[in-house]
Each structure stands twice: as structure tokens, then as C-alpha cells.
Image (cartoon, rainbow, N blue to C red; front, side):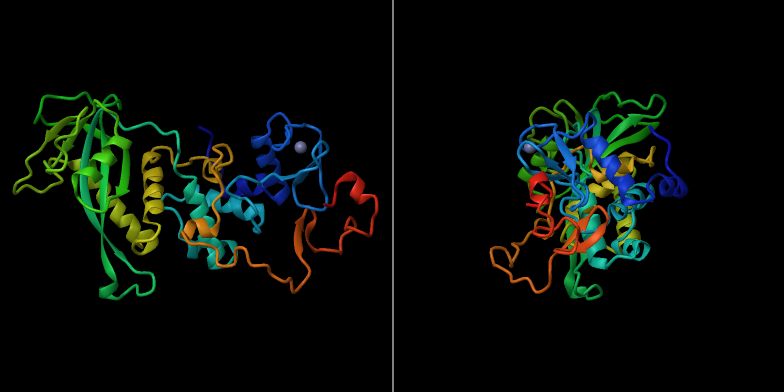
Length: 362
Ligand SMILES: [Zn+2]
């Protein structure tokens, strides 16, 4: 695991957009640029568009950020890099309002930036939990965005959770014991969380099947919806008058952390996007012993996360889609030297007849 970069190291390593671009390019194409449309390696860098390659074979243009979570971004790459670094190194994460203030960008940009970064926090190829796993449900309060203090607009979200038990001395997965035995000297391993619509069997069975490896031992509070699941060993505990955190200590510790985190960093969860916040919590929890996770993981440069637009994230259709807009002012493009209006650069169409031959204009 690489050493964590301090703020000064980070500033030195990424002083400008060019250094950010070089890192993305080297990660995406370690052996040199390859055109994603035709596979040709014969390409050159455009000066009229920022960090964009033009293929000599098919004449296609490919931006280094195309197809990543930074797809078609209007923010400077440095803002993305700094935001990913802050999200990765702050032990509790950072709210959009704090990020907006630190970066000098609008709250709406900071919110969308964080939503996109959080989508990289889930690893599509992650392994299932195994060994001895505690499983339980809880309710967490949420409040409505528009009426944060109104008691009428609040409610509870039902969350299901699973957490692995590990042996404290070896740090490895705990070996299952006979039913009802106590597990002493343990540690918690990885955890998984999900929102479920109700406590009914199908919801709980679906969560177990997608998150826990068959053959594992499930320790629960004896909830009636767990029995009947094939391929798992069930070890229910009788809670009775006992406080529930005594027989199921790890799961209740994680629930307590989740609730405090939601209140502390986000001043309470909202019902919308709750899945994304749960993913962020799981991401941080599962990496709590090596917090300085690489900011590259969060930028998703290597994992190839598909880009999500604002409309994908809010789950609505773009109301302007398909409507032809009349441009009021000349189009502004981000070029390698900064922003410029169409028709003002040295390579704009019409002014320099050579430009259409070398592919620098469409
Ligand atoms: Zn090509």
C-alpha cells in the first residue's frame, strides 16, 4: 500500500491540469494511446480541444476523460483530483457544502461531483462475505430535503446488515462453533448494508444470497424470516430481556457507527440516494485499517466505472432531451490552453485551411 500523500505532496504532484491529465493517460493507456473506435495507435494530441486525441486512421476524437466518471466534465481536472483526495483521506468523508467552500465551486457542482465519486466506491468484483456472519435489521431515521425540521416529513428506513466475525489473535475468519456457543476474542471483518422495503422473507433471502457465500454460518436474533434458506447454517440467539448488543456485538457496533456518521457528516440521511451513502459507509468501514486508500480508486480510473449523468443520478428524464436549442452566445470549449469561444482560436474552421487536413477541426 502506497504511503499517504500529504496536502503538500499532493499539491506538488498535481500542480496543474496537465499533471492530472498525464496520470489519467498513463493509467488508461500504459503502452501509449489506442483509439477505442478502430484500435489504431496512430494518433496525435489536439491543441483545439483539451486533452483530446485525434486518430489518424478513423479521424475520431477521444478525450482522456471519455468513458470515465469525469466524462464531459466542465470542472478542471485538478478539482476532481482534490475532491477525490479529500474524500479518500478524511476519515468521515466530506459533505458537499464543505467541499464547495474548499474548492470554490457551486454547491450544485460539489454535490454532483461527490455523487459521481461515491459511485466508484463500490467494487463490482468484490467477494462475498464468508465464515461466521452476524446479520440483523435496524431502522434509521431520515428527513425530507425540503422540510428538514418538520416532524411530518420524517420517517424510518429499514436497513439490513451483515458483518463478518474474525478471530482476534489470528485476524483470520472465525471457525464456526456448535450452535449457541459464545464467540469470544473476536474482531469484526467486512460488512455489507442494504435498504429493504420490509422484513419479509424474500427481501432478506435476496440480501443474504447476493452478499454472503453459501456454507457460511449466520448468527441472528432469531428473526422469523431467516429460517428456510438453503445452503447456510443458521445459529439464532435468544435475546429475551438482554440488551441486543451483548449476543450480537459487532453488528450493533456498526449500526451505531452508521447512525453517528449520518448525523455527524450529513446531518441525517435523506431517503433519496440512501444506497449511495450506505455504499460510502461500507467502503470506509471495510478499509478502516488502511484509511489512506488511493484517491485513484475513488476517481475510478482503473476500475472503468461507466459515467453517470446528473439525470441518471437523480433518476429522472432530462426534460430538455430531444429539444433543439438555439444557441444565444458562441459555444465555449475547454482547450489545452484554457477556455475559448468558437471562432476565436488559431485553428478555428475557415480561418486556417490547413486545419481541416490534419483533423484538428470536425
Ligand atoms: Zn481510430
